[in-house]
Image (cartoon, rainbow, N blue to C red):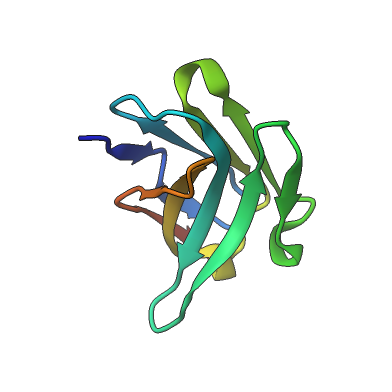
Amino acid sequence: QVQLVESGGGLVQAGGSLRLSCAASGSIRSINVMGWYRQAPGKQRDLVAIITSGDSANVADSVKGRFTISRDNAKNTVFLQMDNLKPEDTAIYYCKFSTWFNRDYWGQGTQVTVSS
């Protein structure tokens, strides 16, 4: 059974950096889009950044200029480099892989906490 395993979350002071990673534990065929989402307490899950198989990337306006998404196709891994973190970035971060066959896989989530 395929699982997405996230790592890299933690506690950091405002202005600091974290790098999240998400790797598939099994074989996933034909991954198209890889993405990161986040959910703060009491709020809906929102898109943070996505990257296509052609390396076209988009990030949410709230993190533009601070977060960078990248991927390693050979290792079925996606990364999220988060710089100049702010307290409002505090949330559980989830990765998601979408295949060309319209199947989605989600990670279990990793907590990111930014203190002021």
